[in-house]
Image 1 (cartoon, one colour):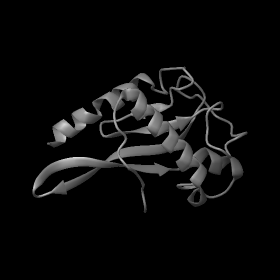
Image 2 (cartoon, one colour):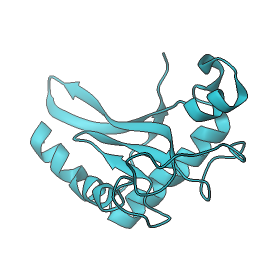
Image 3 (spheres, helix red, strand yellow):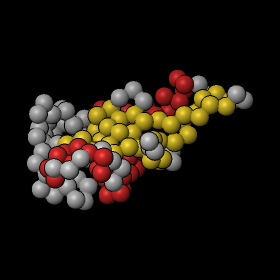
Length: 142
């Protein structure tokens, strides 16, 4: 496999994430923002991690009121014997809106268990709907 074939393997996931784009699609399950090697996950007032109740959400330029929750990107492993392979997903969450609404510094809202669990559910649902097996999900450690 090559970088190109590995990206092709994930193409259905990114295509579905683009279809479910938070910026243009007002549907309740449209909570994604696709990139070239991963995607972001946003929440809405009707679909959010536990603990986000009462957080004021603003539509801004998006199709509905929402707030950023997570980033997901492909995790690569290269072996001199084999071509580069996407072996896992790297997940990171930052509850900026939750932090702002509680007036507490943002450090305490990085990779919160409730946010990670909710984001993993969204990842698994997106991959299942796209018909692609979900690689193992690893939480980004900083």
